[in-house]
Amino acid sequence: MGVQEEEEEEVCGAVKRRKVAAAAADVTMDLDILDCPVCFHPLRPPIFQCTVGHTICSSCHDKLLDMCHFCSLPMVYNRCHMVEHIVEAIKVACSNGNHGCTARMTYYQREDHEKGCPHAPCYCPLTDCGFSGPTTTLLEHFSSDHEWHSTKVAYKKPYTIRVQVGSTVLVGEDGHMFVVNMVMEPLGGVISICCAQPHISGSKFRCRLKLSHAEPSYSQVTEFLVRSSNMHGGLPKDIVPFIVPKLLLSDTGASAMAKVGVALGLTLTRQ
Ligand SMILES: [Zn+2]
Ligand SMILES: [Zn+2]
Ligand SMILES: [Zn+2]
Ligand SMILES: [Zn+2]
Figure 1 (cartoon, rainbow, N blue to C red):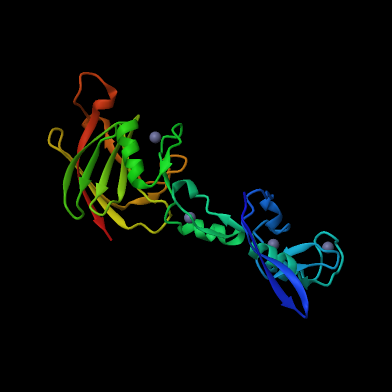
Figure 2 (figure 1 turned 45 degrees about the horizontal axis):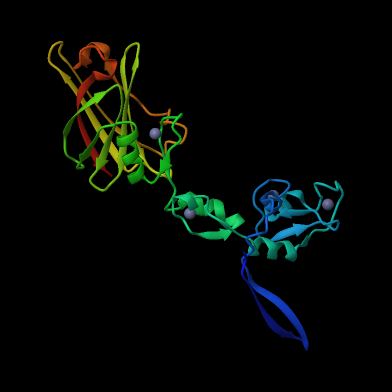
């Protein structure tokens, strides 16, 4: 049930009843009507309407130059204060509410908020899984539901890690989480590393991978910027892979494919 509070206000001797806070839980509305019908972006003040009443956003107004898109006639546009009041009055919840965000904002501010929302989740990269949550919850999910091994690492320090077919997780000293993945391809093991981050930002980490092999003698060192991703829809495809020739992969188990792996020297550096 919504709670309504009313206050009375004197306006030119007349009493105007004004609802100051209507938390109307029983009101539903199709939010599409708050989108500009020309560019489909949310309407935000200033909003304009033709003399017939078709509303458009201010950037479409600047482009249409007094020609209404719907009436196809030269028109005089005016500010539409009523629709401006409506878009300011309607508050929507952040779509990360189920991840703990309690922010409410106008419909047109929602996209900007969600781009930087501190509660935005990362996703399990296994496409048939569908799990999402903050990185700490995701780490728990990886180990309990997928039995992915995780290793804590300090930055700027060389480690030897064993990478096997499938995924493993590195947790940095500041809590950043990295998914190291290897898939088998005809020429060898293809390794990728991605930093789980809810918002796409410039890469903060460099990774140095080193493969040394005595017999046959082989060594390979690669340094690259670690790609960040919220892993929605899987691991990012545009990662430059580190390829380990098939000959150098070793099998630590009896015959299980999942045990095929390689020991690599790894150093992560925060930029
Ligand atoms: Zn528009
Ligand atoms: Zn019109
Ligand atoms: Zn939010
Ligand atoms: Zn999962």
